[in-house]
Length: 115
Image 1 (cartoon, rainbow, N blue to C red):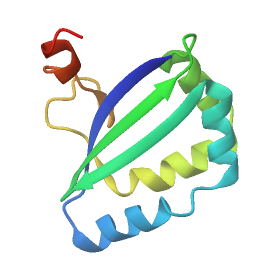
Image 2: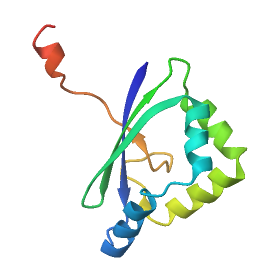
Image 3: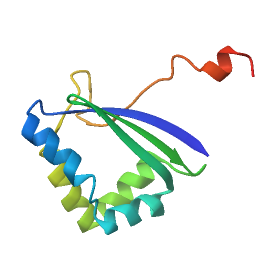
Image 4: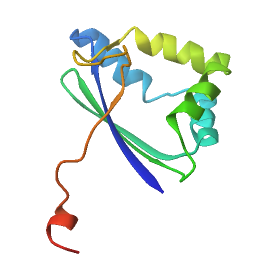
């Protein structure tokens, strides 16, 4: 199993942030199914103001490229992504316009303790 942590910004508009969070209490079943089919085992999204942080645990054969290809072939996922795009902003340092960018781990307590 692999873990990825990603960050994304929302548009800094309180009503849009509230609506984005509300949508994530009722994610469409087809979107949930597509995540599982791509190899996503667990996913959490946290928010702080207009910043989002996602933790994904995935199968060993998961790749973002394969997931993106599957998403492009799924019209329901495309509709969801278009809708979510209304709320999201590109991070200022995104070189290719992607909204969710992988984060680099800079500290690990377990590793720091030598376990």
